[in-house]
Image 1 (cartoon, rainbow, N blue to C red):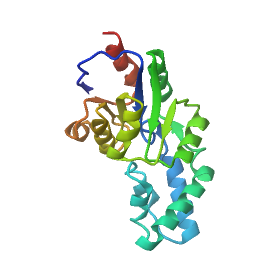
Image 2 (image 1 turned 120 degrees about the vertical axis):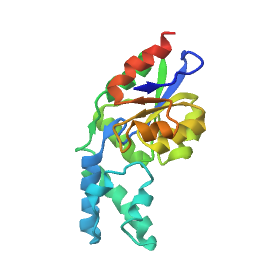
Image 3 (image 1 turned 30 degrees about the vertical axis):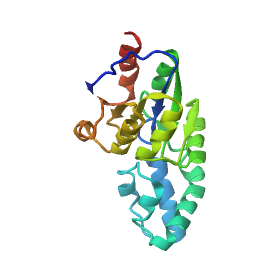
Image 4 (image 1 turned 135 degrees about the horizontal axis):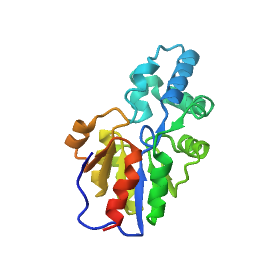
Length: 213
């Protein structure tokens, strides 16, 4: 674990933002199943196993790898409509997810989820897994996450992708990265992550080092 702590102690009230896919939840089984169904319904070959190795960027960006430009919007809409039936049930919370959320609340903070996922489907995941948040902002990616984070005064943003690090930096928040997604510690640090944790099981103890000062 490599860290850089904020200049000021973390005192309530404050907000902490979390990414969703591969930060709080392992959505790979559900996303894989949804892409396979999309392939079956459209007749377009999609390597769903490859898709789930590069989660993070907007859906349309991934869809464009498999469909011609004039079909991307239509395919993305179909994917989103299939998602509740195929992706919610197989998805699990990643280790430490519930505890990380609880740690923020115990420290007097508010919990945000700021994700590139379509917001109605993100809401279904949170409800299914019993992850309660104060604010949910969907359909935002990389630097686009900064507006939602700034609006809530988020001091910390936790994610697994280089785009999440960029979003935290754009919001003036501490960039906390976990290596549960597609990136190891070195590229996350190179992207500017202030803190790199192996997963969210390490988050509560790390957060206590800020609130106890």
